[in-house]
Length: 90
Image 1 (cartoon, rainbow, N blue to C red):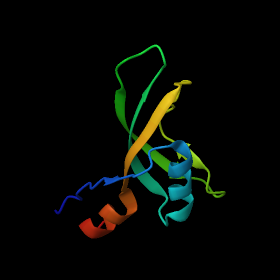
Image 2: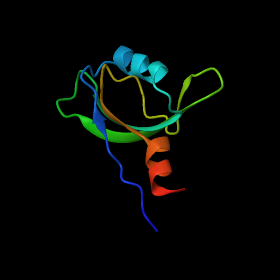
Image 3: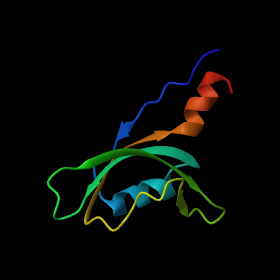
Image 4: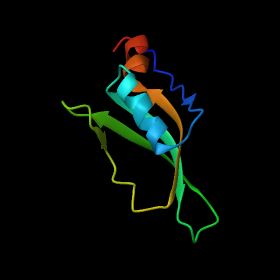
């Protein structure tokens, strides 16, 4: 069985607005998002890979409720899952 390869594409603009523009312009419904976040009072970033999908209205739905009001969030890269699964033959 051929396993899918996960390839993250870096986002040039790591802001939430840029991620949402990318999301609405993409033709995928399932992605892994590589991101980092922190509060103002923290020096170190927390890095995470999160699964996101969309509903019938193209709203971004996160599988994990990772956001807890952090002041700094950067969307570093995306991996389109739909594409990787098709290439693996599933």
